[in-house]
Image (cartoon, rainbow, N blue to C red):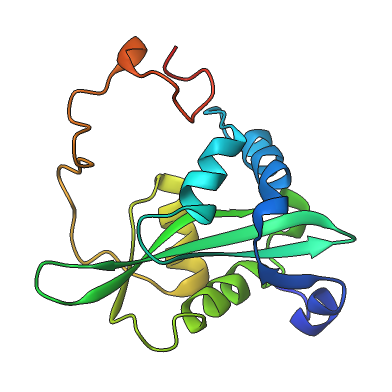
Length: 167
């Protein structure tokens, strides 16, 4: 059951993340996921990104309680996609309409420059976008390598931004 969104949103500040939000971002992510991250991940994704990126956040009394990231990426056929990343709502704020609102504002921030949306998600993320946003699976990417990263495994990674996961 979703409660009245106006009541929820009256309690919250919704805005794009800024550099001072790094530690709250890390805390919220690390409270929910086994893979721990460091502030450098936030800086890489949202402060110094390779492609246009936004992280829409929700705050209650200056405490981050939700986020939805979106990267604008150009496919080799000229189509621009919005790739959803770092989608997370704190447990006590779930099922209150916050996730779709953050997604809507992230997409809106690109002013119609995105032709399609996609997510490379874990199972929870896949179910969240299907249930809350009405997205559907239209295909699968079998292999996804970042340029120059095909040999990255275990301890070969130095100065990694994911905390201790590769050490």
